[in-house]
Amino acid sequence: MNRIHNLKNTTTLAHQEISRKIAIHEAGHAAAIYLGNQQKGLPPVFFQIFIKPLNNDVQSSEFLGNPSDHYIAKVEGGRLIHTLPSSLEEATKDFSAAQKHTYQQVFEADIINLLAGPLAEARYVALCDNEPINPELLTVNALQNYGGSSDLEIANEYLECFIDSDELRERKMTELFLAAFDFVSKRPNWLAITALADSILAHKENVIECNEIIDILESGSRRMATSQSIASFEQRSGVKTALKIQSAPTRATHNSNRL
Image (tube, rainbow, N blue to C red; front, side):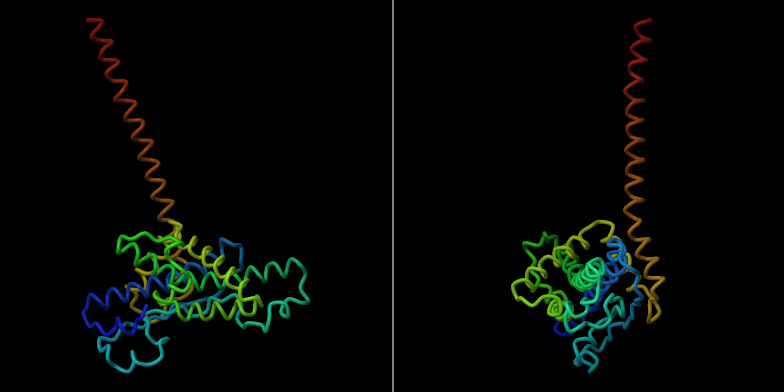
């Protein structure tokens, strides 16, 4: 998304919508870092969300500087690999086969977590516009339209350490893009993302601490289990009611025959 261009629209509604998109974007990163890593059996990692409300004076220098300054929320931390090696082969040369496999998993998880942010924003925009969204309609490069330029840049830096061949890098990026797309599309994960986005927008402090983020994400993802339990209960109750209704006329008919 061209956030600088959009921020020039000074209407309150436009600011609210931009804020919502950015909140969804950062919540996508956070959900993938916590829930995604957990689902892969990877170790927990510390991260926070820093919040900076949009300035009403969108023409101020604050919004004409580096693109990285144009946010209301930003995930800090969350990487499993803190410093990229010169190459994956060099970093793992003394590792066992199991250790190499784990390191590759960690490498790929960081890339997926980077892609989850712009994919969450893309999904939100599609849902708002009542348009379909699937991997055939959305390309990796299109994520630049959803605030994903810096995310793609870092993801490509990872892949350059990971794979020598341009063709193989492209294949791996597509594979990880699809994994990130699958993550944000799953109902429990999406509920967690939207719950965290709501909390980002409502938060009064400048920082949401890691433990609080985790609580929000877990509570949001549990909405699915709760709603399914309620639906199951209602369905069972409906079946019982239907059985009672069906049995009542039978008794009435039987009694009328006796008369």
